[in-house]
Image (cartoon, rainbow, N blue to C red; front, side, top):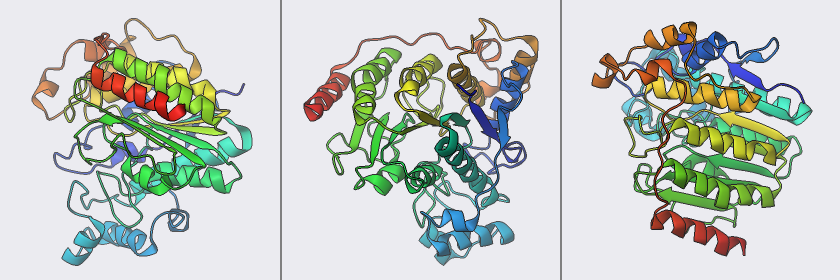
Length: 370
């Protein structure tokens, strides 16, 4: 089997959303550097993404909206009317210097991955993707364009008839759900925190029978994620028999993330990827949320190890440790980070009981599957 591909781009190193925005931290660039420091990139495994063209974006996004994002990047300004119409320059979606090029590069990586998977199958990792809140004519939740939707559409347009999408971000993947709620060719599964923004993704929502939502109360531990994957998500994906699987692996359900209240270790996400990766002949793994630079970098680097079957070190080698020690973060904990954020790839396990609320979600799946 061919080696997995890693898609990245230097734009993630040199662009920022500015100020104290939660995404103004090094994420994809740190994963690129950490993977290289560990010697985990073989010749030919790395590909640089190209920005999606406006024409490519129009497969899902509205022409006037794409033009508005381009114009705002050129002028670094937006009218009050367009700000309200397109949700730009407000709601966590700032006007900034690369506000078209950066998200278009994420889409370009996902489209490059889709084209490769259609032709050759295998595994592609694009941590710059995963912007699952984007709407056809509005930015939402830090997402200007919706690369998971565009990648899935590209695979369907390319002749596939069954694509599964699994979203592990702490926030409900509402943009993807809305895009495919009535399309039985796409299985959409989302494990997210109940009651958290965008306040969608109720268990009762079923779409065309293809939607499965798992709103988990705060405090989700490793054992609960393991149970959801083993007893619900895995059987769902396997029974769907997808020709491609897309996984959104936001790192914001980890215990060290500042914007949520779940308690996962990064190993829980690693196991989810390992347990699902062989259920389709084509696998696209995306990034997503995650607002602690150390927890995101370590989590997403470990995902790359899982995709390649690499053994993770008990302690990071000096070059990798030095890289993590060079990071900074404006939050108070960032001024004196715990030592294991700097020396260890894996978090300590976060075990606990599988609560009744989670068991109810599992029962609901069994009932729907018959």
